[in-house]
Structures are given as structure tokens and as C-alpha cells.
Length: 232
Ligand code: AMP
Image (cartoon, rainbow, N blue to C red):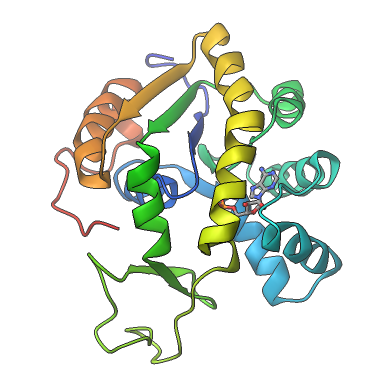
């Protein structure tokens, strides 16, 4: 990549609850990248009750992935608007078919994979609650809302995502094992995969930040030092 004028095409991957979204938010705070989260795009469609949203809610509630053709069309369509920007994809691609479809349009330069033990993930997810309208996340153990069960900013109720309920979580982990692992192998063969291991976001972030400083040209870096940030 070096000092070339090439736009940055990054992906962050990790099992459900491994801290993808939190780390993606930190990345875009420190580096000039636009973040696209496939889960957020789907949840936005669900809130607006679009056709895609209605369909997505059925798959999500069962802990299943949304079919590849639908997902690929949706994300590639969104990305078209941002061809002139550096971007970071979060939650897409999740299958080999999606990775190959993305590859036909964009060259991915870096895939950051989060590696976190299953037991840690299980504990994190069962404690995760969100404010549906904004997507603001809370962790009932480490980062609870200021008042019980309501969002700090709006005072509206926070809820547990239907796909974070324990019964759905086991299914999502199995889906991840079966469908997403081949994607990691695919990117490893291409030489763009970088794995970050740890038991919490704050342990992974300094390594990721330091690594990104070596990968992202200076002009796309916003800050030099990682701040101490709230963990999820
Ligand atoms: P996330 O917020 O990334 O954990 O995604 C929540 C749910 O949205 C997943 O469990 C899937 O049901 C669905 N989903 C998100 N991204 C994708 C994708 N790339 N392909 C298929 N389904 C997806």
C-alpha cells in the first residue's frame, strides 16, 4: 500500500460478540475510513419495516445468515455511493460467496480478524443490551446504562437483541464456525489476513492501533496515540 494514492479497503471480522463494532468505531475515530456494518444496515431496514428488513428479521431471529444474493446486493449497492472514500467493512463478507462477490468489484487490502475464546464471548453477549433506535450498546456488567434499563441519551428502554439470547447465540456460533472460517482461509491465502487475539477489546485495541499506524498512510491518520476508551 505504502504512500500510493490507492483508497483503503479494509474488513474487520470476528465471531458474534468479539467486539467488532466497538473496535470498528475506534478505528474510524483514529483513521479516516467510513464504516459499513452489514448488521447495522439490516437493523436500519428492520426499523423502517422495509421488505428487506422484514425478511432479515426472520433469519436473524433464528440465528441464521441472510441469503448471500440479498446480502451481497444490499452491501454492494451501499458501497457504490462511497467509491471515493476509504472504507472499513464490519460483518461483511461472512461467507465465501460474499467474499468472492466483493472481490469481483473491490480489491481488499487488509482483513483484521478478532480471535476471542468462546466462553468470553458467551459472557459478553448475554450481558449486551442496546438502544434500538441509535444502536448504542451497553454491557450490563462493565458498561451499564446510568439508570436501570434505559438509554443514557434518550431515556428510552434498552433491549436485548433477539439474536443475543442464549438459545440463538449457540446457533450463531455454529454458523460462524461453518461459514465464516472459510472466508478467513480465503483471505489468508491472499496474504491480507491479520489476526488479533485477546479476551477483551481494551487488550486488542493497542495492538490493532499500532498495526494500523504502519498500514495507513499518515495523511489518513487522525491521531497518534490511542486514548483510554470505554470497553464493551
Ligand atoms: P451482526 O450485527 O454483524 O452480528 O449481525 C447480526 C445478524 O445480521 C447476523 O447474525 C445475521 O443474521 C445478519 N447478518 C449480518 N451481516 C450478514 C452477512 N454479511 N451475511 C448474512 N447475514 C448477515
